[in-house]
Image 1 (cartoon, helix red, strand yellow):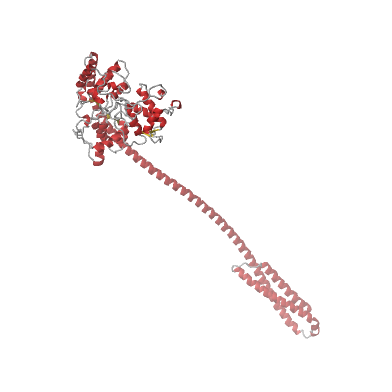
Image 2: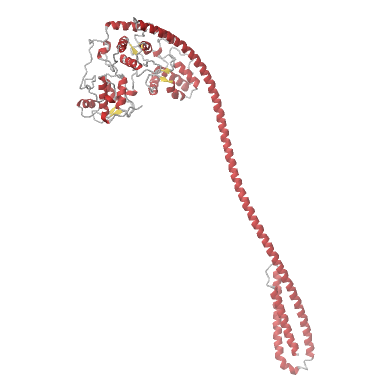
Length: 601
């Protein structure tokens, strides 16, 4: 979680000449930006612990930018002064009246003279002898005690966990995760002082630094290793020392990293050095609470990303968790990652049990869970109450080991049940997948059915339109038939009229013949009427003229008959009524003409 922003009322003025000289050392070009590595290298000269320096960085860089501006660097210097003066490292103490910060460096304006080897050591001789006896009773390996061995001794003091964590951090002067004889004496001295209600200092006073440590260049609480080129987000809080104890974990155990001192002989380990360095980088990114261990929840995503089965991953975890604590140290995590890498890249299955070369170097030669009852045998020798408590703790530890055995058996049964449940879950997943496929097929069929319904509706509409058009065409045909029948009736009437006209014409022709006969008879009498012929010649001419007209009318009647014949063949004929009228006219004209001639005779 990001630290709170610095209130304006607590920001430090930039006119302090001492702070200006410090700032010039880390930013000689006055770029207004101090990187994490430059700030770390400078601030570690204050002699403060890693935890304190990490907290100072968080407060000075509240936004997590990975660098400090000038104001942020001033805040860091002020917080260093707070820690060195014994005040709590908080933003609320920035305005307290306190001495300026001090740094172990010849270039610092306030150079601190390192304590000489002959300086007085706060641990008295009689105390040192007593603490050495306790140290030997804990069975050190190569003159060193691991955190697991020191833990019961510190826990027997009943001090708060945060106080014990600070005691460990101060006493582990060279930050290797182990305590030698002098460092253990410092730890016990701090515990006894804390039991007498004396506060544990935030930084180890020079008088408590063992003479054997004063010749070394590593100051108490200094950061031993920093990355050469940290990323922008890298800061003091993300580069804890390998031996610091930032806190006590959820089980109350200390969190030292089990690294051997450089003076110890090198041992063979199946994990290659290059892979170990890579796994350590992953471990630092995964250890979110910075307790030196990773839980199953923290590494779950990394393990599952390998694609291995849960049963195999559980077996690898059980191999790596050599102490059955439910968490993995850095070396244990590297061993687990090595087994996973071997299985994924080369197909090599992890062993059923660890061979000697597979055991992490930090775990070799240390007592296992079955020897935990001997840890408290010599604790606080000479103090009856503490001895009784130690024996009681030893008994509880034996009971704890027995319970752990039962728990492991129960866990194995749970793992088997979990495997069965997983198989059932896999079957359920397969059935669910099949059901989903069937649902998808059903949906596809339903979609096709809906599409066919739409096509059917369209065809019905088209069929309805065709039927409507057929009905319209049928009505039109019926209308045409009625019209044709009417026209045929009219045509028949016209044919009747034409037949009557023909009959009339025949009658007229007969009359004409009769008239011609009359004329012949009249010619006999012509001589008798020759005298009157001249007078009636005009009338005869007129009669002839009318006769000529009658012939023309007759021709026209013939033409009309021809037209009627054409009408009967399919063409529309002229009105037969007109032909009848015309025949009647011709008949009348002929009768009129011949009548006139008769009248003349």
